[in-house]
Amino acid sequence: MEREISLSTGKACAKALRKAGYDVKEVNVTRNLESLAKDLNPKPDVVFNALHGKGGEDGCIQGVLDMIGVPYTHSGQLASALAMNKQKAKETVQKAGVKVPEGKIYQINEVFEDKIDIEPPYVIKPNDEGSSVGVYIVRPGDNRLPFVREEWSYGDTCLVEEYIPGRELSVAVMDKEGEEPEALTVTEILPLNGFYNYEAKYDEGGSDHIVPANINEEVFNEACRYAVVAHKALGCAGVTRTDFRLDEEKFGAAGLYYLETNTQPGMTQTSLVPEQAGHKGISFQELVSWMVENAKCYA
Image (cartoon, rainbow, N blue to C red; front, side, top):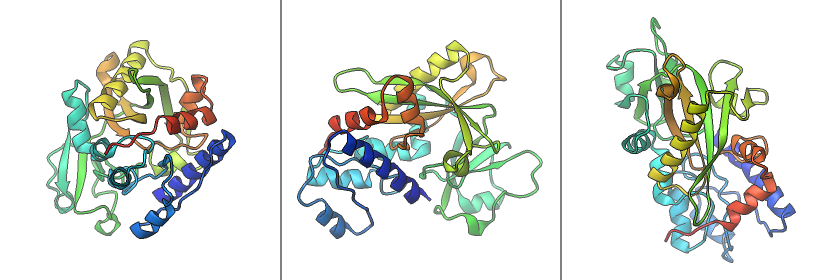
């Protein structure tokens, strides 16, 4: 699934960078490191990392690029690996004062053996996947799980966490060299099928984006602050996007819960981060150019 998103991001960013005057070579990355080494010879000045999912945003490709000494966009190896591990990321930002849903890691067999000690409604999802793949909601009164064992292809474990009802919010952060990271704005996401899953994210017409979100000023400001706190606590760089849920049954920012930080957010012109940048007067071409100019090597 995420390969298609990576290809879309790559094509959009390559096109914009060429328009900005950069000499761009597109590399179709596979698991063949020998092929990758050939594609990166001669050594490029910068790699624009457009990869999503395992291998691309979990520290693996970052480690390879660090090893050969090539600067790249987005976060480094450690921050990428930490942010990709949803439970570890939550524990990290919670220590920094950000509110998170209760949850823990279970063996997937424990889920099917009804050994969950979290009361429904709760969410079952992979602990280390992106793009909302493999996410299921179990509601009170459900007589069975919303998926069968054969449909789970994300390893032997899963993350189970309390379901937070309410509104879906997202905040992009830009980390400018020598300056404090800046939250761009808050987007409210309105999934048209009732749940912001993979299809709602990427299918045409799957969701509407309200930029800026029409929410209480206190909640708006706290979402921006939380996103910057998470970005810094996880050690991120470049551009990130942090997702929240807002439970309006609770007063003000007390209902704001951190879900995850995306170190490799989608980067087509209609993706959330470019939309927020556009709201701040930063064009897509300017955004990707800034990312290239601020690329780093962490070796």
